[in-house]
Image 1: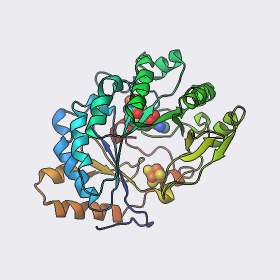
Image 2: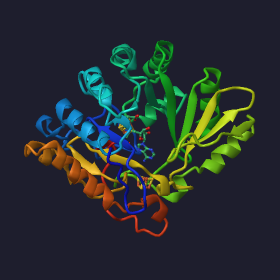
Image 3: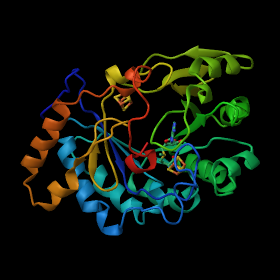
Length: 335
Ligand code: SAM
Ligand code: SF4
Ligand code: SF4
C-alpha cells in the first residue's frame, strides 16, 4: 500500500465524510438560526455525494493509507438509509474503524439498524444535562429526552460511546460538573471540546473559550483524575481516568494546546470537496473527478498529490493569523 505524507511528514490516516449539510438543530456555535434560515441555500439533492460515490472515494483513500472513517454532517442521521452506507464502508479493505458523530435525536429509531449494519462507535454531542439550557442551545427547543434515551439504548446495544460537549464561557460552563457526574455514573466517556472559530458566523472570540486547564481545574474540585497515555500517534483527545474506575474523561484542546503537528485527518464535504484542514478556505472538487469517469488509479493519484502538498496548521498559527479569512462552515465540512 502507498503510504503518503504531507510536507510536514504527517501521514493520511483518517477521513471524515460529511453526508449532508442539513441539520435539525441550530446550535449557535455551528449553524446559527439567523444565518441558516429557511432561505439558506442548502445543497440540492443532485449536488450531494451518492452512497456509491462515497464508497468509491473511501476505497481510494484506503488505498493510500486511510484506516479510520468518520461519518458526520450536518446531522448524518437525517440522511435516509445510513445503515446501507455503513454496510458498504465496512467491507472496504484497509478500513479498520468506522465512527459516526450525531446529535443523537434519531438514535432511538436508528441505532439498532446501525448496529446490525456493523457500526460500533458513536460520538454523541450533548452540551447540557439541564434540559432548559439544552433546548436553548440547540436553537430549536428540542428536549434532550430523546438524546438521553438514545444514548442508553445505544449503550445497551453494545456501542462504544463518547459524549462530546462544546464548552462556552457564560453559556454552558456551569454544566461541566453536572455532565461529568451524569456520565461517570453510567461509565460513559465524556469529552470536553474547546469552542473553536470554525466557519464565519459563530461569534467566536478568545474570551468565550474555556480552556482544558480551566475545565480540569473545575473537575478537580470534585474528582480525582489520573492522566492516561496516548493510545496512538495523532490521538486528538487528551485522556484521563476517574481514580479507582475505568471510566475515562477527555479533552479536545484545539485552541489552548493545538495538535496540528500530528494531524492525520482529511475531510470530504457533502458535495464532494476535499479539505485538508477543518479551517481550510478552499477545497478540491472530487465529485467532478468522479463524474468525469476517471479511472480509480487517477483518482488515487490526484488525492495523493493533494495530500503531499498539504501545509495546513491553522490552530498552531491561530494566534498570529488574522481571523477575517473566510472559512468553510462546520456543518458543511463536517466536524
Ligand atoms: N450534527 C452532528 C453532531 O452535532 O454531533 C455532527 C456534526 S457536528 C458539526 C460535529 C461536532 O462538531 C459536534 O460534536 C459539535 O459539537 C462540534 N462543533 C461544531 N461547531 C463547533 C465549534 N465552533 N467549536 C467546537 N466544536 C464544534
Ligand atoms: Fe447540527 Fe451538529 Fe452543527 Fe449542532 S453541531 S448545528 S447538531 S451539525
Ligand atoms: Fe488539523 Fe487543521 Fe485542526 Fe491543525 S487546525 S489539527 S491541521 S484540522
